[in-house]
Amino acid sequence: QKEVEQNSGPLSVPEGAIASLNCTYSDRGSQSFFWYRQYSGKSPELIMFIYSNGDKEDGRFTAQLNKASQYVSLLIRDSQPSDSATYLCAVNVDGNNRLAFGKGNQVVVIP
Amino acid sequence: DAGVTQSPTHLIKTRGQHVTLRCSPISGHKSVSWYQQVLGQGPQFIFQYYEKEERGRGNFPDRFSARQFPNYSSELNVNALLLGDSALYLCASSLESHQPQHFGDGTRLSIL
Image (cartoon, rainbow over all chains, first blue to last red):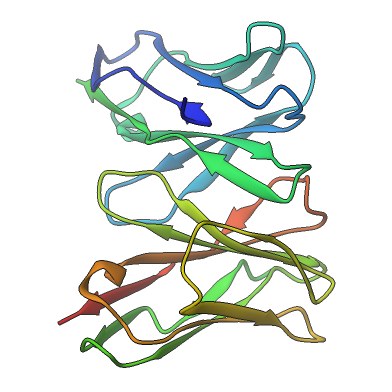
């Protein structure tokens, strides 16, 4: 089992719609969870982090955490063409000594 | 404030050579981590340093080494380069090891 799994293929959403991304993780001891956005040819940019069960909202982004089910999700409301990027889920593992990443999900927002 | 800075931005080497990549963390950040990212994959953890001590090491061969200096900057060294070492090498810093990590622009290493 991979430490962090993002299994959805490329996601195409119309402009103004909601994009929903999911991620599961295997380390039950993980305490910190992150979403990064990565544009083609660029480095990852932190967009959300969440430590507690429930929802955390920041502008058009909402992160959701369910530790019992070991999944993290990211919602992007009112999607814009500038949201077109790869979104990486990351989880602190091994007692916070390293960050494990999923392979990423590509999001394409269609004008 | 300046973000994480990495140098050089691009590097071309041949097999068997060695390379040193450099990273300066965000001011006040004590933790520096190194990652390798190949096309189509998420970053893979190589090392984490906190207060100049190695806190974590990923599944990479001993050809990979790193260190952190008193000013919290860091170097990643790779010896005996292989074609498979071609990748984007990312440095990230955070205040503490469990807190959000912020990435530099990376060093793109190409091995010929």
